[in-house]
Amino acid sequence: MELRSPMNRTQGLEGRMNQKEKKVDSVKEKVQTLLENTPTDFGAWALLLSEIEKTSPDDIQKICLVYDAFLSEFPLCYGYWKKYASHKARLCTLYEVEELYERALRVATYSVDLWVSYCSFALLSYEDPVDIRRLYERGLSFVGKDYLCHLLWDKYIEFEYSQKQWSRLAHIYINTLRYPIKKLHSYYESFKKLVATWEEEIECQKDTEMSSEIVSNCGTENVKDCGYAEISNAIRDLLNQQDGLPRPNAVKKYLDIGELFYQRSNQLDRKISYFEAQIRRPYFHVKPLDDRQLQNWHQYLDFVEMQGDFDWAVKLYERCLIPCANYSEFWIRYVEFVDAKGGREIAQYALDRALTVFLKRVPAFHLYCTMFKEQIGDVCGARALFHRSIMDSDPEFIENVNREANMEKRMGNIDAACMIYEKAIEMAKEKHILQILPVLYTNFAQFTMLARGSIDAAREVFVKGIQQMPNKSIIEGLIRFITIHGRAEQIPKLDTIVANAIVPESDVSKAFSSQDCEDISKLFLEFVDLHGTIHDIRMAWSRHRKLFPHIMRPSFNYTVPEKNTLDKSKEGRNQMLVFSISSCLWR
Image 1: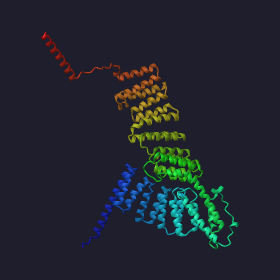
Image 2: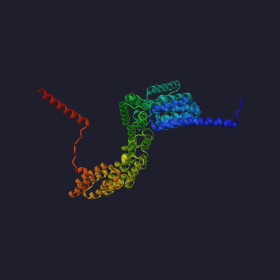
Image 3: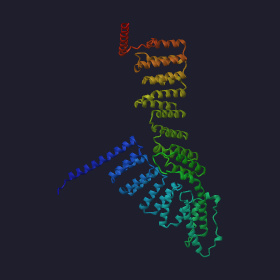
């Protein structure tokens, strides 16, 4: 057997490490390509995930690289979070798995399925039942009013049965009746069975005097007042501390509260069953929802808003924003609703989530957010949004500049507003987006005219643009601007600018073709004709005809015949001559 030297072993190890690094770099390149070119192509991401799981099932570095990038674009895909967690559970520590679930729930807080998965992990991993119970309670505080939250309630009930925590089960069963959920009737039956069991135990007690007991003061008319404290008191009194048997008055009180909750929830369930039946896709998907689904969510939200339960409405909005995450109309509606109800922190948190994840590539939503932040007095936040807005087209960029400058004007910051236009112009030059310069200069001049009330200051905006970047459209923009806002006194100043642009050998005219110069001169003639005297008109006309003398010459429409046409005419004449000679001979 050949022994390898330490140096050879070291070289072999380094070679394997280099090879692994190359493979990781290859995956990085694929991820980067997707992020830069087609970040919203769900199919491409799914293929890459499948490829990594098949080729590198135990390479946690590659798995994390792809899953992290994918879930940054599609954070509501709970199934992929679960798959990611299963990889982590195989290859990492339990703490890292827990961290992953916590990260997932920061962006998908109201996902019932994600909470079920997290709690299932906790059941297998946590040693202290208190920690498991705390996680269930935390999850239910977010999704306990979700119509499909029975998935989590069932797991919680199963856990407490295994722990034989009867008082906690009493809490759970009565809480399952507080809101309309899919398994409301099933939980009501379980609730009644539990009460029936206690009533049987009471019947077996000796010297029971039901008539002497004080019954609950929680009636139908004040069912909303039966909160956590009322329920806790009833459950605490359920068991006699001396013999461990339920107290008759406490059972009656517990039953009354449960019945009242159930009746109220059952009435609501009948009203919302239509909306629930129309929900075809309660989970997130990149495919768009049809109009009927969108309309159903709007109507469902209308109904719940009218019930006056702010927390229930918030929970329904959050549930709605899972399948409707890509629809700005629901985010805007949510923000407007909670802000009107005094929930400004909730509104701002919703805006931040939409901006950074779900609607980060929707310029119109960015503009809405700037308006909202300006209205609530968060000017710094509005400015920051303008700076990070993604403008995919020239019109969007121009609109963004106009809106930001106008906001600064409303704040009284005229100089800052002008600086915004100047920076936008410089940016357009640096990125060679020259086609938007005339529009930017025109908008800047109009803004200057309005903000400073000076046509001379507005004119100087154009002049500066012409000097820095001679452009036919900028000069035409200037002439049209002065045509609208100026008067006769502007003729000499504008005449100097136009002359410098069209007279040969001038600094500016070198940038223009002969036709460009003629077009500019014609437009100036129209301006002078509108605002000037006959003397002004003749002066401008005189320069125009001298610079472009062809306009004074007659136009000829003479066309030189083609050679084929001449040959055909000659042939025709020859044929006529032969015909004439033949006729004479016959005579």
